[in-house]
Amino acid sequence: MKKTPQQLLLGIRLDAGSTAANFYVSDANAQLYHCLFDSEPREQFVYLWAGEPAGRTHLLQALCHRLHDTNGGERGARLDPREGAEGRAEEGGAIYIPLKEREHFTPAILEGIESLSLVCLDDIDSVAGDGDWERALFSTLNRARECQTTLVVTADSPPAGLPMQLADLRSRLQWGMVFQVHGPSDEDRKTILQLQAVSRGFELDDAVSDYILQRSDRSLTVLADVLKRLDTRSLQDKRRVTRPLVKDVMGW
Image (cartoon, rainbow, N blue to C red; front, top):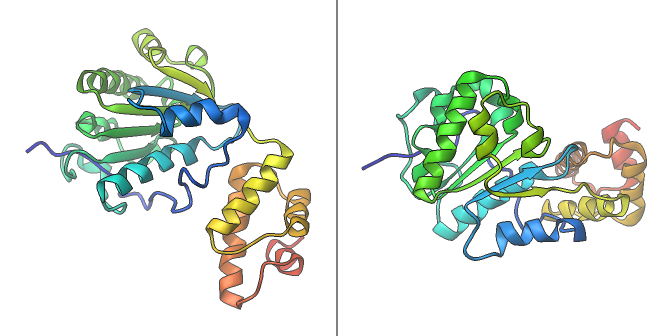
């Protein structure tokens, strides 16, 4: 039986909090959210881009979570990308590949992934200009299309703006649905902060949320890290997340 990859042996797992339910859907992102999670039949190729942190990785991991939950699969299934075609998991699953971390693996990680139901490639702009990776990505797009595999990719600019050297690859990247992932407004950030806190099992009142947003870098990635640190300390000390605790943990 043909073997296929499912997850990476890189110390990388799907973030438990990166689910569809935990993604705050602003009006600007409603159409792309519907396309990814509600439309039937699902679009075969979707290209998501944003010039700033806006939840692209969250969306990819949420898609993988949903497929694993639907199939009753184990999220922890892994693949050592150095093994190439070896060490594959059974077909029908999903794989999330963070291309920014490609120093840990080779283009061989893409071999055979068209046998999966879902392939999510994060930050494809990071391989622009690398001939081996561009050719591997081009081949993957073609095989996925032939096999009706759902392929979702992210980048920091629209397809036409990517500095890909392979002309055929630039062309292929434009045949699917293209969406800009819009970053959150200040009010959205507050809502997102509070929703993600609830998903971790604690609450942030308005005063604490405002305190964090006034002092922290406001990117979603940094805010998620702040919540992780607060959650850890709160559990260790068995304390509620209050302004004094935030000040103590973050050194503000």
